[in-house]
Length: 630
Image (spheres, rainbow, N blue to C red):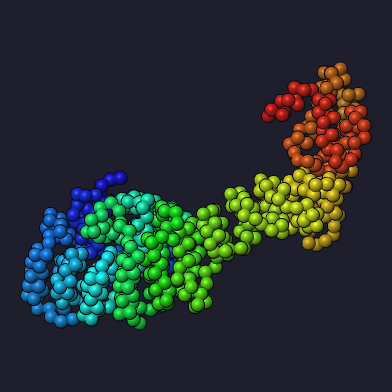
């Protein structure tokens, strides 16, 4: 992987050791103040006509990092250096005579002030941070609110909790108002922090995994390729901001390669700080804000889920995100089930597990917002997410197997089908799945299911199975032919009788195509027609032998060659058909052929193989062997 991962207005932001300017990136990354959304919205908008389904932009141009900061790494300069910058900033702002809430800082002033504020927060210099708040204009106050709120997921002591909550109170008291942006941004970051605490991933690994999963998810979305590329770039940039922010705070804590695992006490402190923010925001945060924040918190977990440790959702690393989701639902988020279904659809098993056991689900249930585990099982099975299916059944108690089972049979998804069968399905569910596979001409699936359906069920429902399969066949009756050839009732007479009954039926519920197919190939009339065709074929051969004008006298050929000329096409058609039973038409022709060859009368319905063996005995071995090898 190349060292330089991302450029923001000419400033290299990499995960390596050689660039200090990345340390300021978490302070500089800003969300567009007029257009707030969550990362998933960028993907969802692709499904809207012309991409107009969402008004979301994740980040605007990051402020330039000065040459001075690139040389010295401004967050590593120490308290004296920071305070000297404050004096300069304070002097510059004072000279512009912008006093009070009406003042508006220049872009460069906001950049410098935000950078210094981040440095003060990271070094826990609460006095310096508070002095910078007094210099901020309203928009810069919103920026400092985001920076402070982002820092709560890295605090570890009661003293740090007191300092950060004090800053949040002071920033809000001085006029910060963009609670929506702060809530969405910190929810997304908190989720990334929890995800990155998996022991299997370093921060550099996380960037790679995120990019790969994001690409896979976009490929699964419909929409214009240009819009997909734009959405992917925005989401990736936003996620990389979060990872660089995590990397910066991890280095401040002395962990260069991985995110340290928080203790239960530290997590409680972090959640307490977030609760303080929600209390201070009060009714400034709407139900829609909580809903979007919940979505923002869930989204990273769908990207990282494939790299989580087994049981991650039950460990300490997931405690913070569980508490966060619970507070968001309590605040008014109403999209728990939507996120649950999407996590199931994308195979985000650990997120599914979190939502199943989370306090947020309990709160949602009280608000009549239950998660639908059975519908989620349908999504997971449709996209062949076996691990998620296991979780939904074992931990979510999903029991509605029939719908997913039938859809898997219709699509021919053998892996999902085998999973359901091995889990244990009711007899009727298996019978309906067999019908679905038959109607869709999924012969391999039907062959797998047939032995699992008890014979008494097949016998009782045989006519309905064939009728339903014919009705939904979509033009192909290969599945119906397979059942009959397989002697699906385990009794040749019974299997032939069912086909004949439907062929002679005047029931309007029988599809015309099915009736015509059975009349032509599987009815008693078809057997008689086969006998007639066999007799006509024999008479034609006799005429050729007696009156044919061919220079080669067929009468003088060896017997096996004469049989081959007469019956090799019929033999090959029977072999190609396969199965335990031949169609009645083929059986009639075989009976007549064997009779003409002196094999006796073998008209028993279960004697198809014996008939074919007699015919094969009269053919030249080299023709039989050649066909068998081919």
